Structures are given as structure tokens and as C-alpha cells.
Image (cartoon, rainbow, N blue to C red):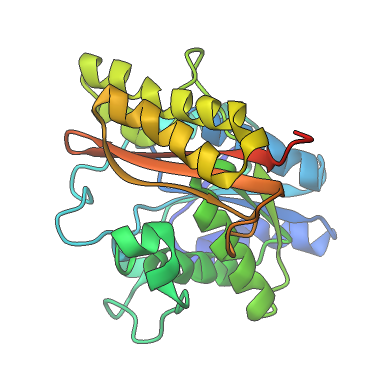
Length: 286
């Protein structure tokens, strides 16, 4: 495929993918809510590597109302469609699927949704009730519409990545889910569409998240409690309002005493909420 196509409906999407499917090419999906940055661009690069030049890369741009709770930032979530198209074109995306809400949810909020299961035990699910129900439902719909062979998600939203992999496994969806590494600014802040909300002083304060992760990694040889304590101390010293600081297994099922693990943090700066995470390896051999 040579030039970027914009599909607004499922019918337009099917027509755009017809030649690729007929020719046996593979399809990769990069689901986004727009306001694209270099982190998203890296996902597009991974997607292209997965399907090769004969395949098609589809980037969806859809601000999904189902995953926003009362009082969250649905109305002010940044929408930069023309800039998003330019980035998609520059990164070799073949199709941008940009449906309106009524295309995704023609009868209003769907009656049948995807239950994330045990949400009260999750990190983001506990803080944002209903969030993962909305995420998994829209991702399942995108999988059904695009029918990708591969879907690429960023590790910055690590719990989301784990939930999507679990959904794919539990519901036998024929999609290979790829997790792409976090992309950071030069000063260490994880790239996020919400970073543009930050005032200059908040932007500086936000660096405490990556410093907290670094402190946790430095403490990994002393076990999970030391990792969490080191990270928490950095957030507390910076005066950030935190939602959680936790160490969990790579699949987020419990906390190991040794071996591979994940350190995850969430904090608020004014009305902006940021999350970040990193891999750690617990134990004296770290």
C-alpha cells in the first residue's frame, strides 16, 4: 500500500484492507486515542516490522468514552487529528481508522461488554472503576472490525497490556499481542498524551516518577518491600499525591520475593494523573 488512507466506517475499512487480505498480507493494528507522540510512533515502527512491507499497518484513532469515568478528562482529552495523520503518514501507516462514536456504538452504550474480572484487585481498576471494562470492550470491537494478525500496545500502560493479553487468551482471539518498550523524553519522563496538560512547574515535578523507578531498581537486590519503599520515598519527598506504588510479578499476579518483577507507580499533579513502570529483578543476584 502506497499512501495513507483514512477510513471512517467499517465498510471503508474493509474496502481498504481487501487487497492486502486477498494477497495474503498480514495486518497489524496500533490502537490509539490520538494526540500522537513519539511513543505512538515507536508502536507503528514495531507494527511494520511485524508484518513487513507486504502487510498493512492500521492505526486506530478513537477517544473511547466507555473507558472514562465521571469527572475524568473525556471532554478535554487532546484531539490533534491533522497532526496525527501527518505522524501516521511519516511512520508508514497504511490506514488510519477514525470512527465516530456512533460507528463504534451505534445503539449507545453496548449491552454486552467485556468483564475484566477481579477489578477490585487491580491497580488502575481500583482507582478508576469501569475503566478496564471500557478498554477491553473497545479493543475487542477493534479486533473484530480490523481482524488484525498482530496488535501492538505500549508497556507504559502495563496493566492494560496484561489485561488485553488475558482477554485474548481467555476468549481465544486469533491476535498476537506485542508489547513495545516505553519511550521517554530526554530527561526520563515517560511520553504520554496527558503530558501536554502539565504546567512548567508540574512538568518538572513529574520527573519524580522516573526518579522513583530508578530508586526502586537500585534497591532491587533487597527485595520487593525495599523496592517499593525506595520508590515511595522519592514521590513523598517530591510532594506528589500518589495513587499507588507497588511491586508485582510480570503478569501482575501477586508479589514475588525474588526473580523478575514489575514496579508500577501512579501519581497526580494537579488535575493530571500520570503512570509509569519498569522491570526489576528481585534478589541478591540482581
